[in-house]
Length: 218
Image 1 (cartoon, rainbow, N blue to C red):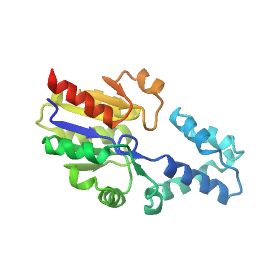
Image 2 (cartoon, one colour; image 1 turned 135 degrees about the vertical axis):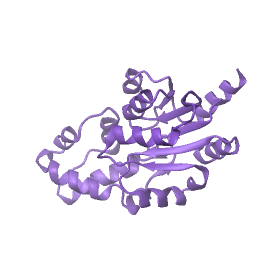
Image 3 (cartoon, rainbow, N blue to C red; image 1 turned 180 degrees about the horizontal axis):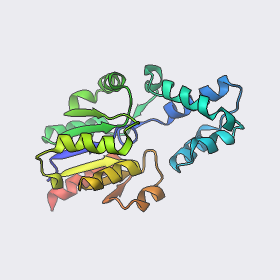
């Protein structure tokens, strides 16, 4: 039985395509560059095409340092976060898991704790989860691992499940010996996720719900 589910925020719970693209395109347009269309930009991002390569396609590669500064300053502003949308079925699924007394822990590499909490509150997610771990992007993989390790201290890790959408989530779960489910609805393509050999490779949270239901019937 699953007793704890560790959830990455961006991707598994929230669709951030519009936020990421709006931040990228606004910065370029303000400097007189022509951004890629949203489909081309998102395809590149999901395939792990680096920022320099994406900027080069708009002849803006020399603008990289300034672009990165602006990106960091803007991407988690409330106006940007308001562009995020819930992935299908998120609230009902989280509510169902909470009612089943599954501990729900969000672990995200966001940098602004208060903005993340405000967003989760406005979207109705906050009352459904036990903890929100905002680990910051500077600490990367190790920060996420240590934050989750503290939460799971003294608990049976084999009854936990990590749900994420990037290689960071898969590798973090592996380092803690937690089964991991990778979702293709977020920041990485199915091929990239499959190459990391997660325990389960599914489309979205609805599939995770169905998987857990099947597990309980065995």
